[in-house]
Image 1 (tube, rainbow, N blue to C red):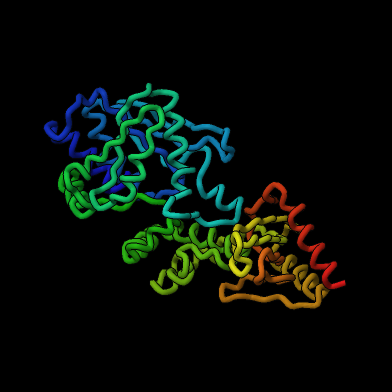
Image 2 (tube, helix red, strand yellow):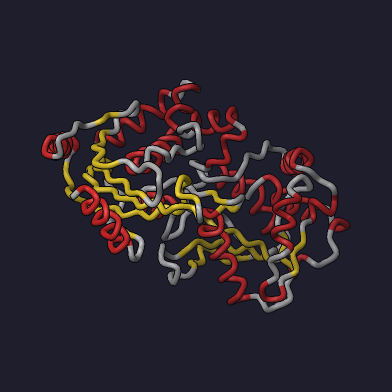
Length: 375
């Protein structure tokens, strides 16, 4: 649904000389994260689906069927006469982020959220419905050589990757110009409303949140929960979504977010972390193991009183940050590693009790050692 993919598709549908195959051999696949901007669905329904209907091109719309890795995929639509983009399935990426109190994860250039929400359902459907030896087309532009190189190495089921924009020498600017020329509309970026990569175009992001304030409020809500459990979890890395919203004067978004928090149920959480040491380097932090446990559920005032009581019992005080998030730090991690971190925090309903397998054994081995050292 993005600029590059739509550029490929509209050229193939309007310029037969640009492709070397009949359209009855083409299948268009889309996997929904469930959290795209509403404008993206409107653009697809209004401008792209009529072209697919006119040429009787098979359009398959998918989503994950659930959070479990064994849940599989759900088919939202499978037709040569698609009428509407069904932007949400039974599972949304935000369901997972809320349950785990995290924001989208990016590691070593891999968009882990995209793999989970889009790549896995697409691969599973292809495995079940398309025989080995198919050509898999992705809309990577000519200025995305790194992504192209990585995708070229992925050849499961005799998959033949093909990147038409690169073959045509089209960069993002050319693709962005070409789609509107065919469709007579300005095409917007396809991404989740809380996508961390959206900050690459801050003006566009601010404009989209201004027109869809509920979308911006969703991003703030996810970040608020993640920050409560981990102050290092700002949506945009060094910049938080809250800072971005305030800096761009998005008062309607801030009001929506405040109303959501005012009407929400709250959790009092216990968060424990173990930081391992990097191999041979106890001064450098390695892998983080985390446990989240719900201690109480209720309204904000009652849980804040409970947090104050627990802080007093521990001989410390509640720390409230710039966003108004209250926490009690029972122990902070510091080198040498391995080291532990222990805190209590208030957050809206969402995070589920969860710990990495083996966490308690590791936690107790380290905290018992600390107690013995003190003794």
